[in-house]
Image (tube, rainbow, N blue to C red; front, side, top):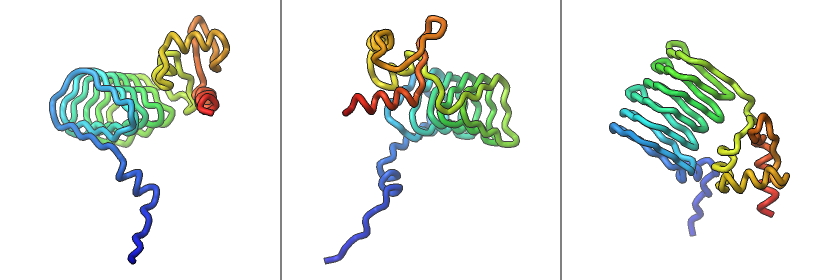
Length: 175
């Protein structure tokens, strides 16, 4: 009987990885609730909301507001980008829009025109982001926040939630 070596965790993660590559002209709204590796090489117009890694290839032309975890731009983007983990502008990148990311790497040669904010990585979430993050109706989140059931602060009539506290709260609810 032959024994096969067990694949390591990183190998299993790579095998289970969801990879989507778009080489076409598209428009509309793309929302990914599961982490994916999305690469756009064509043209895209609309809105993008991703989890995982989004790569805008060097032949891509994107006109969209983008919200995602890790974003790498090598092509042309016109629109605002919010990266929850990191944003990288490669040497061929041309970005016209505002950016917000806790980690930013602008490689020499990249062109960036806009404003930049670099919030701390454990950034605050608004009520809409918490609703999407926990997959709970926004009205239910507001009800729980008002009653003190979920940790949050009300500032200027707007609820703000620390991601670390929300993660802790969510894990305690699972038990």
